[in-house]
View 1 (cartoon, rainbow, N blue to C red):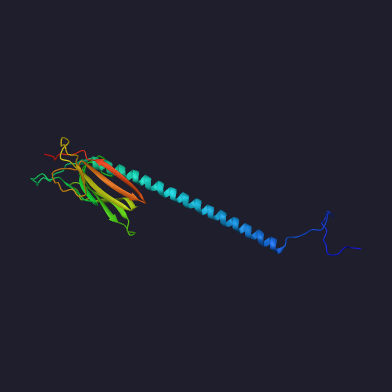
View 2: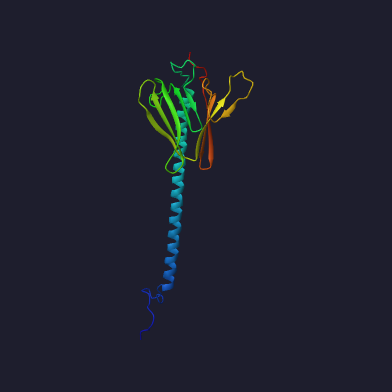
Length: 210
């Protein structure tokens, strides 16, 4: 006579028992939790990679921008307008802009003379951007390039000292007012995401052209 209420396994070792609804629900919940954890870890890894790439891009842009500014500032020339009997130099400096003449061009390298103007402007997000504008002397061909963007602050300062034999230590000023002298150095303050960087570039030319 056949037994009722049990299903025997093919091997005849005993009754075969299936998963209960509770066990299935627990399994689904555990799998869902694992999927959420793995997805969160992947998003975190992706954000870390993006931040690392963003930081790398900014550091590379810092490097390129510094090289450009260093080359142009150190190559500044003491240009004086031909009709200016006072011998005032072609140089203007404030906290958010600096203008001078240089024999180094962004596009042409060390060929010809250009007037250079660095300007700090606000981008649509309210952050600071640094632009450089240059024009070949005697030719009207203004070219503009954005060097830095998204900065918390960009600011220029100028080191003033009469001459190397002067016993006074000199001072940093935010606005250059001496029309007959070049600053000894230009300092560029950069602030980005809580970090501050200072670039100090010496100005080699010091005397007005005769």
